[in-house]
Image 1: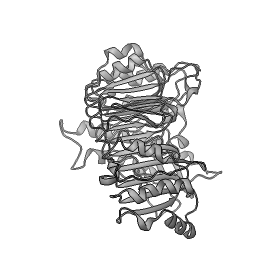
Image 2 (image 1 turned 60 degrees about the horizontal axis):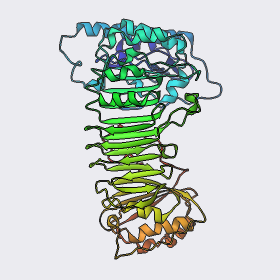
Image 3 (image 1 turned 180 degrees about the horizontal axis):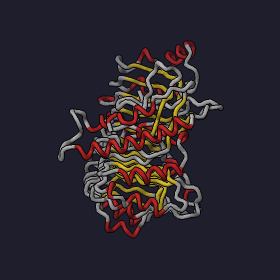
Length: 520
């Protein structure tokens, strides 16, 4: 519904303070039939000046900033809330009439792209969504009404953090609604209120398997018995987080996704070993469960091993919290792998082809991975010997990210041997990022090795833990011997920042992002 014209006249009243009114309803209809049953939907800025316009929704290309809350936030008037609610009903009716009047086969009105027709409520920051509209009962009432009134078809259904309680039949009824027939995207999760209780995913949530392109399922118990019969011929993006399911069920589920491109697995239980064999998968982000309270079982089965058996298109392998597992990662066949990390000594055994590392220390270096261009390593010390031994496996490495855990006792005395050169230092390594740099001797000796020997280096960035004042910078310039750098065109940037571990990378599904770790 482009701008919800029918709703605007109902929101013209001005009040004497600035506030934000969020009515806890699901998203109404846009020109393509999108439904979002997320917590917040009406985002109305009530202005303090009569000369300012009232804004119902954010513009398509902007992100609404959350309002500034004080300890004594004024309550919105009852009339304003009533009008906002009426506006939603009027908007839904207008959308219904507009759809009825549209010529069969006609796309979105005018020359507007489909995305320009969205009301973009789903772009509200999560802190606005949950803080301002936590009235779960209203969510349920409005979800029921909108699904009943919407003529369909809907493209996307988002029900995030719903409280189950006694609502299973109602939730199941929503998912069985004819409005959702042919659904392309689903996001579904419960809010876990009582961990000993079961939180079953309604089987009706899986009836969209033939048409789904994107699925995000979380905080629930997967119906394992259904997995062997499921087929997702269109599914390209799959997220499973805090899901309890069996190992066999997950393998069956993945085997039924013939065009899957990106997979994100976080905090799931019931899966000890995951073996990936997919001709289409391009990106995998994964972590074993951290939130054990979710499962309320001290002996809950967590992910211990990930094996990439056959992934001819895999470009990204992203352990998100390596210190939590899996403890074993084995890459047998991934000829297009370009991005690898974060890797830490929390991975007790790492096999890359025929090379073998134990807790980040090289045990056997018998093969190299020439396709890897971006590598992210976590190191204590930082440990120059361990890092150099590691990167010799990647002769074409272009970007190296180092997460350091400074140790005063670390001795970095390694010297570069021009008779036994590190291949990426000679031809390819263009960018080095060193996080948690404290400027003391172990850090300086580590960084200086790259300054003096990386011959094609273009940029080296230091995430500094202390204040980068002029005196400190001058001292670092001298100690790092920047004037003697191997690459005369190299630039060095120091920036004060907090402790940074580069965990929980958010870009598993963003396949257009060339470097998911680049924050510059």
